[in-house]
Length: 88
Image 1 (cartoon, rainbow, N blue to C red):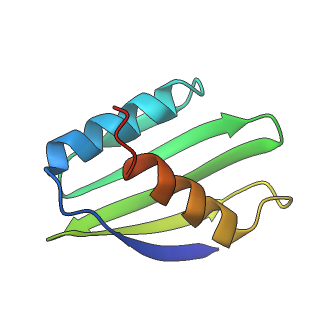
Image 2 (cartoon, rainbow, N blue to C red):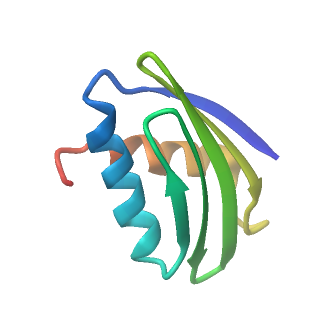
C-alpha cells in the first residue's frame, strides 16, 4: 500500500524506543528491534499496520493497512517528523 524510506543517522536503539512508545500510546502492538519489526496502531479515523527494516541509516517502512482518508505522503511526513524530532 505505502512504501518509503527515511534517513536516521542516530542510534537505532533510540529509534526503536521512539517507535515502540508512539505505537503503544495508540493501544497498538509493536514487536521489533534494530533490524526489523512489525506494528499495528489506532487513530481516530481508523487502524493502521505495517513493518519496517533498518539498513545502515535508512529505515524502510511498508504500510499494509491504513485509513483511506490518510495519504501515504501524509504518513511518511508524520513518521519522519516524529522520529527526527528531539522528543523521545
